[in-house]
Image 1 (cartoon, helix red, strand yellow):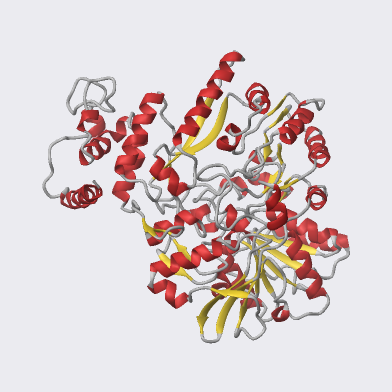
Image 2: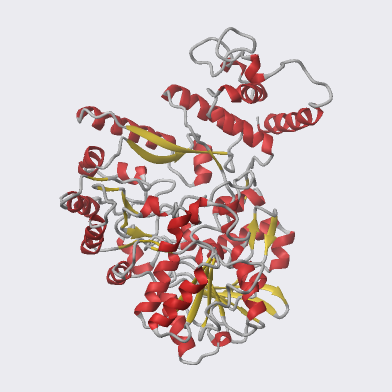
Length: 638
């Protein structure tokens, strides 16, 4: 936060006639008053209930001056790292520092600290010893219990302990924050607020804790990876609001973290009321001189229609954060917001997206889920769609039609994720046809992630034949409509279960498809996903079977290069991967080959690009060792 912000705060408090705030909200993002930003929703919701909230965006962490700008808040400090985990925000999967931060003025980096929630909370403790500290947001939510931390390669304690926070709100916290605010306002001490769903807190004993499952202790899980996997699976099976149990994790004889069951999902009227709050729908004007906040561009003319996801992808944290029960807004609520968008001076006639975590989910997975909660022992779509699954796009289609008919709207696009296996399960093609005809902006983004069924099984994704049928149907519909529109498949390399042979299979698939992706995402082990548990333990927590996990940077580079085998810069490493896997048949002049032999007159003999091809005895010793290790691993697998 810059010094320019301080007089703005003081002037605004005087204008409102405030002598103090009820809550001071510290956030790692710049302030954007838009319903796509958690800070805006929580602060506006508290305001609607009559609470005074002062927002402190991106405070300096080498001084307490910014933290104390509102003085001592009456009820407590709210702390969030922002819309994105601060470590993911700062570092690539290769642990290299990123060059841009979309949630900071002008996109500059280093306006928030690493592990922002912990740093901000400890800063508050320096300034105020006894003011309640309430943690929330994605960073805290996914670290509420002991978790594997990729950046330090260690199992970390609950963030409540390292931050010295008093209570943590996990998941989507509107209902929880109001219950907590009312408890504090009534005079209840923060240490006695132990009963609210959707919270986690610290305790010295279990005297008042009931009906709980005790997880393996922190000491056990840091010593035994199997215990870690067991603990993770217990947590994973207790993320549902209806059947999730209270969880207890011990650290010392007199130190426990208690996680209460998840909060009840919002009903439609509650969702509508949240999105009807008086958001300015833009970043604070003080950021204009610095170039604005880049993150607003993606969401300013988009509409959120749902929350939650019953897709259950292994690498996604939505099960832990939002849950598997889909919550939706009414058509009227969404259309009213669309009318506000249309009135914006910068609106050009295009609604960029209508969706959520999965755009084409507009209701619960089945009737049983509404009555008994999500099943603990099976997924809705994986490995095959459940017989009880309700597949119906009619409500979503009706919504899109209404939005298309609004005056001044030229196009309504669907750019958030479409779950193609769910779409293919629909016996009525009406939605699919109208999606292609009206809602694709030249390219439709989908996420097959891989084509090896062995890898897809670990990912919790459908088999490749489902994607192939989807591609054919998409192509056929485009031909009938005389449209030239394409699919942009998201692909992931180095996911647990993916060895070099699987990566070669993916390269061959792309060759036959005639597609070369511009970008490839290496698997990123972020906290509290099933895939991250596999990455750390090398076990599938669902079955406790061993999983091959590519961890060395060199092997990961080979898997990534194989997906982009046509890139001349990748020639040497692709060649090495093909030799290691015994696939020299893919090196040659035949049309089915991936690359040409070294030194040929084809595309892959440019010495300026690849340098001297002679062996360098000294510098390559370390590389030889790595190659030998990888070769041995793949020989064993064969």
